[in-house]
Image 1 (cartoon, helix red, strand yellow):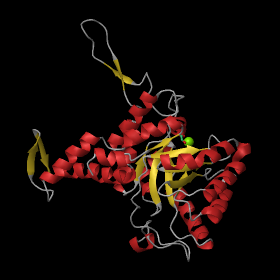
Image 2 (cartoon, rainbow, N blue to C red; image 1 turned 180 degrees about the vertical axis):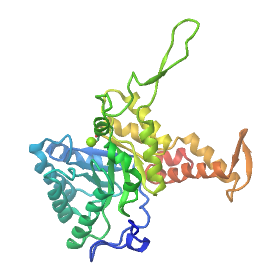
Image 3 (cartoon, rainbow, N blue to C red; image 1 turned 90 degrees about the vertical axis):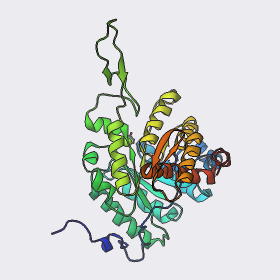
Length: 349
Ligand code: GLV
Ligand code: MG
C-alpha cells in the first residue's frame, strides 16, 4: 500500500474552512531574514525604522531567548505584529521546537491573534516529514478556527543529522513548505563536528598542497558547509521550494560573512538569516545579482529570443542551457529591481 497521499489529497485543506493550500509559492524577495528578539522593548520600538530596510522581519522565540523570557518574547512578537504595517516586507516567526513546553502556546496564541499578518513559521530541529505533518495539521485547524485567509507557510531548519538524512521527505512533506534554512550550530553539535563556531569555515579544514621544492606547503582552507548547502539546494529546488543560508555568528568578521553568504548564493540559496544590522548590508549586496552579470545575462536572452540554438557573445558560447542560466539571473534581477530603484537603474530594467 502506498505511503504517500494522492496528488488531489495533497492539495486539500486539512481542516474544514482552512484556506486552500498553495500550488506555487508567492514571488517574494527574501534576501535577508532579519532576526529580532521580541522580548526587548527597545528593539520593538526601533522596528518601524528597520522594516523598510529588510526583506523579512523574523521574531525569534527559540534559541537565544532565555527560558524565563519565552512568554515575554511571544507577547512581544504579537504586539509588534499588531502595531506595525509591514508592506512588502515579510513577517515570520521562529517558534520553539516541537518537544518544548512552549511550542503549543506559541502556535495557538500567534495564529489566533496575528495569523492574518504572518507569512511563514520557521520550525527548528526538524527531524523528518512527521514533524511537518504535525505542524501542517495544527496550522489548518487554527486557520479554520480563526478565519485565516491565506495559508501560513513553513520554513524548516536543517540542523540535525536525522533531518539531513530525511531532507527530501521534509522538503516534499506539505504544500506549506516554503523552504529550508541551514542551522550550522545545532547541526554541528548533532553531527559531532568539532567546531565551536556558528557557521563559516574552520582553519584546520582544508587540503594540503603537494610537497614543493621549497618544502613550504600551504593548507588551502575548504568550506565546511559546502556539502550540506549543496544537499539542501538540491532537495529544495527539486521540490520547488527555497534554500537559505542560516546564521553567521562572528559579527566582527564581515569579510568571512560575505564569503560564506556568497558561496551560498552562487550555489543556489536565495537568502540568508541576518542577526546583526551590519549583516543586512552584506546580505543585500550578496543576494542581489551583480549588475555586470545581469547585463551579460540580458544580452544572452536578447540574442536568443526563443531560447534555442547557439550564439557567440564576447567570445563565449551560449546555447539553450546558458539561456536558462541567464533567465535565472534576469528573473531575480526583475524582482530586486521592483524593490530597489538604484539596482533597477544599474540593471537597466
Ligand atoms: C541555528 O539555529 C543553528 O543552530 O545554527
Ligand atoms: Mg539552532
